[in-house]
Image (cartoon, rainbow, N blue to C red):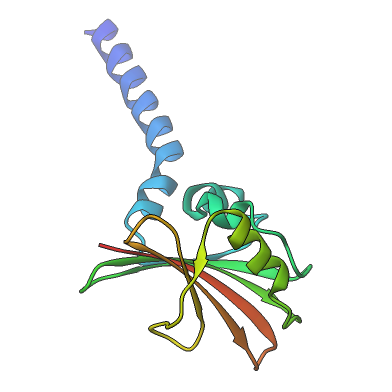
Length: 140
């Protein structure tokens, strides 16, 4: 009886430690939205797509957002660069990555597309506060 109690205690400890480590990722997987910075390593690594990770930082003050939109389903990843209105480096980067500027856009922004018909990149200039908003939208 004593040995089985030790084994059960060991299993419970392992399960608790594993859940403690995995729980934040479970919460992030089912989150409807998130607001984070590059210093929030867990969120940054989990949410941020490569296109936003590799995008030039056109301001020293920037942050990231994620939104899981239902009906019609979309995932929206965004970076907001504060205190700037010059998006030329972002546009150069998108051109270099093979994106093409579109003639029309579904919002007040400049839309960019590549091969994936479900992916849209938007570049918006915001006035208050002065900022550039780059969004990557995946429609399903």
